Length: 413
Image (tube, rainbow, N blue to C red; front, side, top):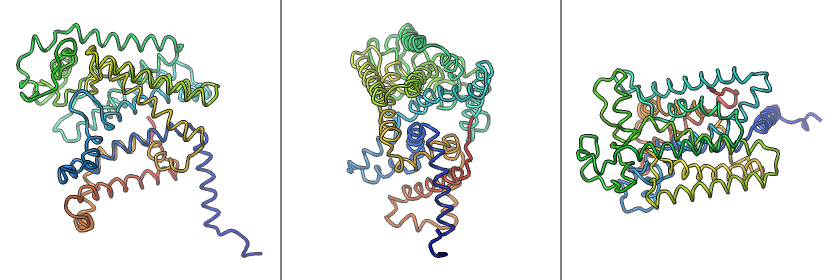
């Protein structure tokens, strides 16, 4: 009889599995898995595919991975370019769930808006802090993912309290208004002749002519705004340009990306068949992609992530709809969840992994070298050392997140 009793370790494992399953079922797991996928792409920079491409320049495989792990120079899109819009899109998806949860707990719209303002402030401050860790003083910059979401989040919340029709009108107003503001600003092709002064090399091949010239790098409306706005803050030197062409005003069309996510979140929460939800997501994705491409190909508005053009909002939003449909269909509808556990662990602590990568990546990698030396990372030759060291660092971060997950420790803002 005694031998038929299950081992205590088996009971503990079964209890833990039951708790984890119950916890995951109480959430839209596809949203967490998608967020985990996005954060994995971000943290994947630690794998240094570009260095392997440099070591093996004729390899199509490493060239492909290096391209997908880098931002395109100006117009176009890589998988890496979809990290920020996906993260922004998922903020919109999560909002209806967050508002419903707080309402069930008795939270008024006024108190929820107060929370939205606090969350906005924390995101902006955290973004500035993370961008200042290698500076001699506070680096007041507002173009990174956290600050962009923070700047737009209060407006997203207010629009989340309105009817879907109002939200669609707001989206149209944001995209048309942002485009119009750019095209009314003098085009660089007729007013700008010193690109070297704004960090654009003479060999730059991405200049546009015609209507699209209003969206050229470091010679557009948003760049002009930053040469005024960013110099209002203490700086070691006068701000003249951002080397990547990124701009503060991108938070306006980023709000458009979050509004697309808000629509997806409202559809996912609606009481309708799963097939109908998936169909809505796919139709919205195809429509957004097509419209973005039409604007780009006709020269009306190029697809440029760095200044978040309206065409980029639509194109990247279409990709986000498609990703959301894929994860939702596979995980929440088909119930194929076991494979996504790895991503879910990351997605449930997205702020934690973001901060870990930004703050202590060099420390973790150097610790491996200090205590293990370079030998274990040279097993496949010097070319693969950055990949293996990065994988070890990434694995360490995952173990930290898994430990946090086991103990239900989730960083929320």
